[in-house]
Amino acid sequence: MTAQAKIKRTAKYKLLTMIASASLVFASMQPALAAIEIDETDFGPSYETMAVDTIVGKPLQLVAAVAGTAAYLVSLPFSLIGGNADQAQQKLFVEPWNAMGRCLGCTVAEDNYYKSQVVDNNVVRIVVDQPSEILINTNDYVIVTP
Image (cartoon, rainbow, N blue to C red; front, side):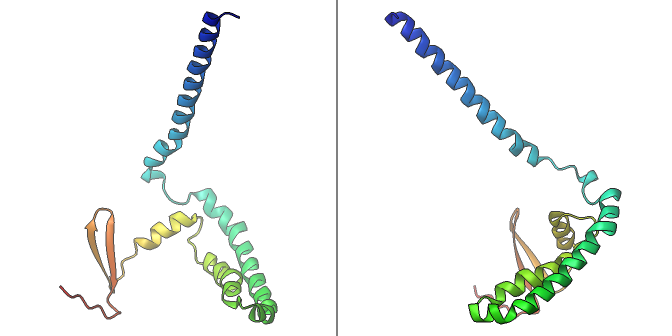
């Protein structure tokens, strides 16, 4: 193999490497660009997700919540000895019952969005710099000093 052929071969591999790298960069950017657009007309639960959640999801969540409560009560002496009773309570008791309160057919993100839109007269919302904001609960004592 001559030196000229070797240079052509390495240049060919460098070109193919650059093309492959650029393709990977553009392919990885595609999900990020797609996440920017949200179709608000199709946001929220559909008929199908509400029906499935009513027939399958909520009954299974109820079973999981009752089973989690029973497991928490059975594991309570052991978790007290181990020092993680708070973690056991959160995972086995609180989280399953909180899941029951999620809106019908909603994902966690949709439920969080809908709950954030509820007006609370005890909260003062101060917009600092879009999208940053400060929330102050007026049930608490707030002291502002200049």
